[in-house]
Length: 198
Image (cartoon, rainbow, N blue to C red; front, side, top):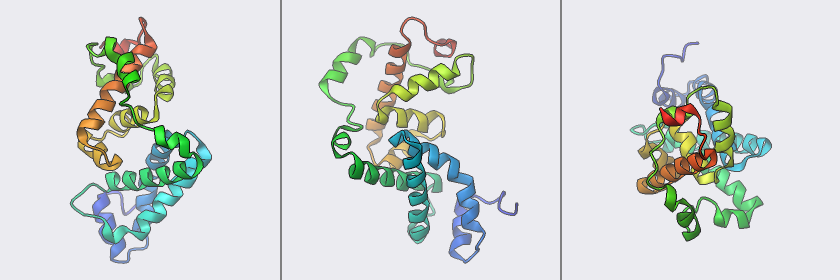
């Protein structure tokens, strides 16, 4: 394929210059990641399909606004996040008001005994004998934590990029990351996967 050697940013420039194959190349490159990202928010495959489609439509319409000094993937995730939030607001207004809060007193009290627990290593999300259990545990976390952890370990984004994509302060993202890891450790209790202990 002629676009394999192009960066995302080069493909954006090509689209803006009228190259008709460049945007389909961007879509093919990021479709799976955007769909997974969307699914983490809504936990519904049909809704994730709709969000993914809407995200790429919005990206296409707003491509001229893309800042070429930033990462295209982060910009695309920001668009997908906004599309997901629009859908959540429309379908579940009550749930939206509580979503991603992650800072209430009850949660802090629950996590207090674990706040000094050993930090979980990056290996947590690597393939291993109990990878299925790790994925299942991740799915039970509140959406805000699940999203940050998946963006960090599955999408390999830096905290700064996650903060930019989610429209949140970097300290908030780091806090959700830490709390999410602590919750995962709590879910596995005294018998965590070997990767937790590496």
